[in-house]
Length: 284
Ligand SMILES: [Cu+2]
Image (cartoon, rainbow, N blue to C red):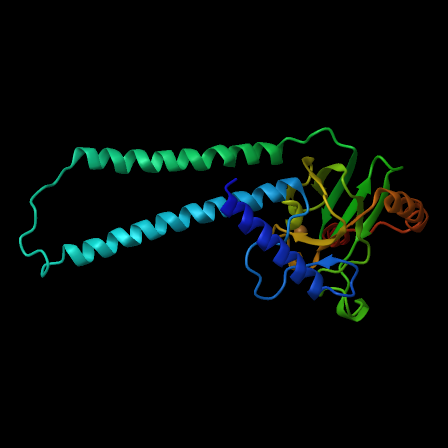
């Protein structure tokens, strides 16, 4: 990575993190997008760090190409307009020039493709995981399961305005957070009970479909603690916009303590019936 890109990355990350912390003061390190935000939320996983730096490289590249084309256009407009150049050249071909304008874009595309494929591979191949999370999309809430921890399971429902604490973000805060330990490689499995949903958690660089009858897999490793928000990213029905999820990354010690509490808390909580399935059952 060039020093300019590195500078851009760290400056934006620092600014983004500072703004996120400022805007969420009082809500225990909750991070959300903020008004007039430019660019991504500050990354919280190695894959998202890669996505962010790849985005910066592409931005620099595309800016250079755009400025170059603009300069060429201006040059042609000024140098070869009918007033400045009343007798135009009758040339129709220039072989060296044609080779250059074919080969240079190919080289640029190859330069872009190498880090792009490396990043795709890194995001796609699940490394040796330390724990698994299974997320099931329903109309319109999520269910999370911790198969490695006595199959602890509970539903995640958005908090309506009347139930939402003043410092919790609107349309993002939920009744039960997904709690995970920091610095732990987590395999995420997604599926759905009714229609296609999608699990999207921007700070982790994760977006994956949750398809009925199919188990999709991805992964992330949270590099810092905090509360991060994601949403269903597949149009799944009338309340598609109201099934967010909150990911609370805590220390490994705090996670172990939370597990004990959660097993008791959710031992008897009934798992909700998806609206779609409930209505289908009524029709039958
Ligand atoms: Cu959905």
